[in-house]
Image 1 (cartoon, helix red, strand yellow):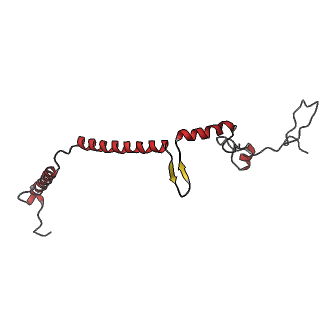
Image 2: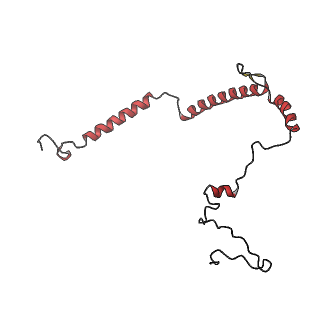
Image 3: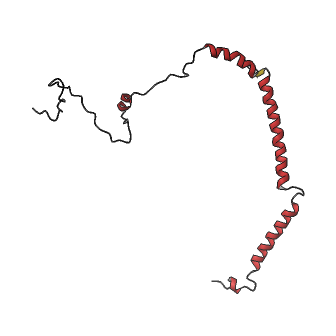
Length: 155
């Protein structure tokens, strides 16, 4: 090592860099405090923001009230206009009462055969089994005995 490098313990004032850092921080904090505008507090900020919000809300409500109670154009080039809600209800309600109710879209149900044909099990929690081939029932003694299984009948 070179002789010019000193460790912290070999310096005469080991706390001097920390003191300079603390003094600089306090200086910046005091400048920021002095440059702060007088009279601005969190309560005045929220009060002014609340006044702005209330003004915007009242303007929006008056615009909406005029839109639902007056006639006017939404897009004149396309021929789209708005009418008061009460007038629209007087026009639409008699039409709705004269038509019988009907589904808005076709009602379809999925048949179990369609699900099993797609390869999906009907009940995913159960293990999949192989389909059983249908065997013709043999009526013996008036149908009192069950049909023999294919594995039981061997030739």
